[in-house]
Amino acid sequence: MNDCLLSTSAQGVDFKAKQREFVAYIKDPFNNPIPADVKQQRMDTYRELFFNNVSGFLSSNFPVLKRILTEAQWFELSQDFFVRHSSETPYFSEIPEEFLAYLQDERDSADDYPFMLELAHYEWVEMALSIAKDTLPPFIEPNDLLQQPLKLSPLAWSLAYQYPVQKISPDFLPQEPPKQATYLIVYRNWDDDVHFIQTTAVTFRLLQLLEESSSISTIHCLQQIATEMNLVDTDSLINNGLEIIQNLIEKGVLFIDD
Image (cartoon, rainbow, N blue to C red; front, side, top):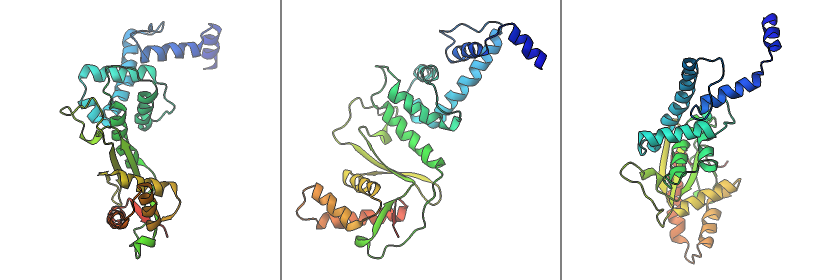
């Protein structure tokens, strides 16, 4: 083994340069020469193996995005990601998050749908929550809900999108965002099932306040929202808010902070 290494070194082979050539061809064979002394068939096999693995992970994690694109468009998108993006992780399970970073910071195509990044994020969230290592605290039945301090589940995210991403399909491809934003709650329950709920701007703000505060009572939270909305009569908001909060507690989105 040592003799072989000495012999190779003596021949002046620059292994780092060889690796760069190897990677460059695998990522983009259309614009990089094949490394010297490597058979075309072998390089094509390596290329196909790597690209198909990455494309497969994208397909399984972004099925709606793939469905609304033609085969040529999907190949171009996958290829562009494969060529442009230098992943910061060696784990295949983190490729979807790397794809989001690519869409946000590196993708540049005037032909893309304007909602592409939001749709990809929406699809990524389900996978991210399904593998999250956090656990849910036990359920506690509230006694005096108005005075109870609340906290947001570590497995619940409150999301706001310009586009109604949950409705996008080959038959619904909006080119302009609607006047009203789309508010969603995505959460994982005690059975480890991931669910999405479409909600309102008021509920979105409620969850924002709970996320920003380590512990805040229900009444304090609802009163702050009423103040922000310049409401004089807060009874209706509080009553509706209590009903929503009770429902979110039962789903495992909110918890009593004991």
